[in-house]
Image: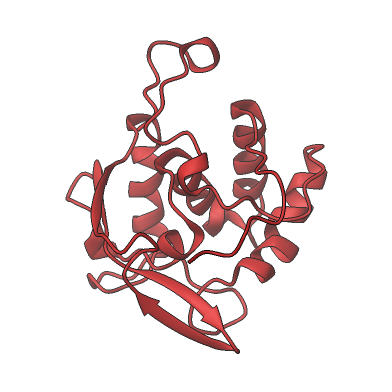
Length: 175
């Protein structure tokens, strides 16, 4: 059973997401996390699912990703298991971020199929959500005028699988 939610889930507006991703991508120290923000939000991935992604989880043109693992942290240790719902799934990557994923793979990810998409900045086994929030998300959010203290857990609350023509336009499909 999942613990009760601590607060209301607040999903950034699309313009806020784009500003945040642009800010993260504009700084050499944080640029490698731009794709993490985009794929988490647009594909509706939970934190542990996104940070456990590996090169081999994507098909050749990065149009589909298989979600079969997630990482959690307890008592200073990393645990990899099936996703939270206990099921593997495939997710279609929205067309407007596919080139970002391809570029990320080329620039930041080792060639082997088991290579992690997102390497932790401070060492350790995976990108830690608290460290990411403190070192990457919060400074970028403040720089673009967002008042959030921690990165959202996008999960099912994000735009993946939804179509919002009033905000995005008919040419941008959301999952």
